[in-house]
Image (cartoon, rainbow over all chains, first blue to last red; front, top):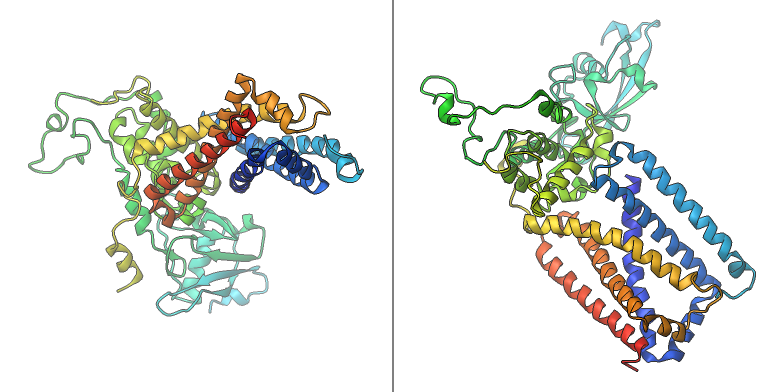
Length: 113
Length: 272
Length: 137
């Protein structure tokens, strides 16, 4: 049940983000300067931390999505719990790697590229 | 009260039973009953002891006492179980909480209203259906009944043991209602056919004598298989350990194959 | 009248035909959610790689994005990603709403409404893409 609940919550969060993303990118219609200003804003530690949250949602939703599609193909249905833990571990590993990469920009005062 | 209750050498277990009569009570309450434990005692035996010795007004459903009739599904210590096949000792607790199956309307105490559940069971047409319109006929008997060859003219519907074995798991469902009660899709949308009815649909869809062209449309609406999101609660809750989710996944593939023009049943007679 | 009598008097819930959406449409919606989902894993992987890792140290600027989307291949990939993401997201929303009884009863207007929202979002996104291409400035 948790696999489904997390999938649902991350999915709804991603729909919200998709529209937010389109809004932010639309600053390009006001010219290059407006777009570059918006991008500069998004490189602050606060938004980088939110990016990590976004990555968490994307990773989980994508990996669990693959798990669900496997079930739809009739694969691994009886190993659903093990597959769920694989999704969790993979999500955690990639997220940790991303945190490690982002760390200096979050707390080191560096500017992310 | 039974004298065994007072005997010092008899271990005692405590049944906390949810009591609720919607016609009288504003909300459910719990009654605590001290029950003398005997080796081999099941939860159902404990409840019947209460009924016989303490409170004759306790309402519960049971019949076969051997996990074959599906009447006594309830929540025991928070989990879906058949009271008749749940050993008190396996609960590893002296405190036993007994509640009716959740998400069905309570009629009284442990008795829930299963009429919606059985309406859905009927809705999936739990019998063989056939393209010739004859297969839905109940086996006729008694005086004046048509001869078998009139029901299915010149046709014998044969099935190999291997074909029968393919859906064996789905045939052992006893319609206790635990799976549907455990399904979040059913919690929020009571119009959803639910795992039990869909499993029954699968039992016939997977039967080589059934007609998929008539069967699949009964199951593949938005209140059918597509409300299943592979949550696996039903499979976990099933007291008969039927891989229900797996069966529902097969139904989704059958529906997709039919839509894409693949017929959806290997060498099946898709439409007779 | 007891609770049981009342329940029996009510028409059975969940009988076939209660769904306000055709069975073919229901199966298509399910199937497309799977196809777009798998496609998204690939497209988002490309999107992510290109935006953040392909050129280490490169800053996300208007000019950099412009250079990328001026390649026909990337313009197509970005447009496809936009369409597929909107469809997958809104079809997912539809699925969530239909999981509620009240939602299932407005299935048809819901579907129409989500198509309007989706097509508007697609137009909005293409509009932004055109700005990068210098068609709108």
